[in-house]
Image (cartoon, rainbow, N blue to C red):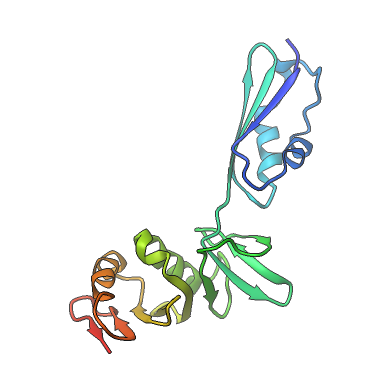
Amino acid sequence: MSVRETAVVGLVSIPEEEVLAALAIEDGRPLLRVDTNAAARRVAQLPKVASVRVQRVYPSTVRVTVTERAPAVFFDSPQGTHLLDATGVDYAIEPPPPGVPRLKVDNPGAGDPTTQAVLAVLAATPPPLRLQVGEVVATSISDITLNLLDGRVIVWGSRDNSQRKADIALPLLTQPGRIYDVSSPDLPTVR
């Protein structure tokens, strides 16, 4: 019982060859000698990999199940456009896919409290609202603003009560106005 096949599933944008190279399991190796944990750790080092599982499938297959990171926001820098996932991990420099909002904070990244606050706000917004967001501007954890694709603005404030704010924001957007303030969800305003 030796490795004769390596099956990789779950890939969207990562080339299979890149995963196989990181996996570093050669055909012909005894299946019982394959260190699945070490192989998974090697694949997990690829920047676009959120999680990975490596399994022995008898009689002769190694199955690799990959979950790729998905962009939650992007930010521009002199190096290019950076994609951040929902946890704030900066995992790629490439053009953002449609529907991913631009992030404008002082220090974007996983260790930045303002970035984390923005990501929490976006996670609380329902898809019909999230798809309208073109840019999120945050000068602090308590000053978050959602700029919509049509030019309207939602003043969000802090991440506190984000679910309640999200529940209020969508119906509020049906009213005429340009600035929708849900920072105090008990007293939303439209200007």
